[in-house]
Image (cartoon, rainbow over all chains, first blue to last red; front, top):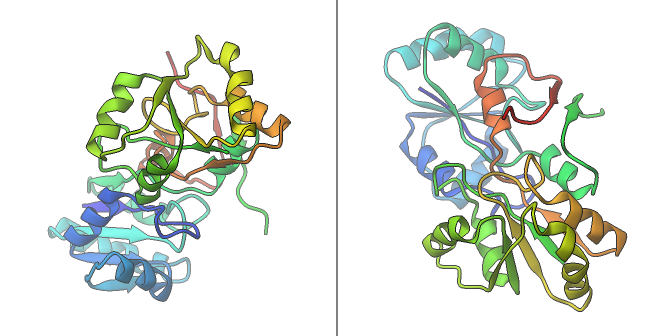
Length: 134
Length: 134
């Protein structure tokens, strides 16, 4: 099973009670940057094996990760800040899980664009997300 | 000041540490349904005055609420589940705050559509939100 776990954007308290529970329960944590996520994991006293998963290695490792999950391992995926998949790596691994009928659960949590939208004072009946400017 | 506070969608642990801190610090909590939010507030031992704010009374009360915030009160807005403003009331009050230079801060937290999108296994470089089907 794969958990997608959103992480804080600037304030470590922007993290859910369930995210801590899930991270303490998994066999392996995948992180976009293991040093960045190390600060968060230390803050919440999570001690689990951690391995890098980012845009430069994801193509090479998704098959091996899927095999581990098929064999029964539970994995959590974190990115540096916000929800994995939203302008961050995740899609390739989720697609591989869907392909192999591996259960995927994305926890609700921090995203940068939703609070920006709500704070704007503009109507929010519908909107389009086109990615971040670089 | 106005805080927009996202709330859990089905699992009470999908709530952030900062959301609890903020709710314990405000003068007044506005809730879409005071009974629904009462369950959440009791779970996290938040004891604050609570008042209804929903699509049937928001037009009548936004001016009075803005006056209270201009006078120095801090208010938090909750809806039944998810982020206020996303298919839920909030826009009218946020717009009133922007008009009067009242500080608005939307905390990051639960939304229904972001986990649904990430779980889909589809690419997420860009997407459009058109509201929920009724």
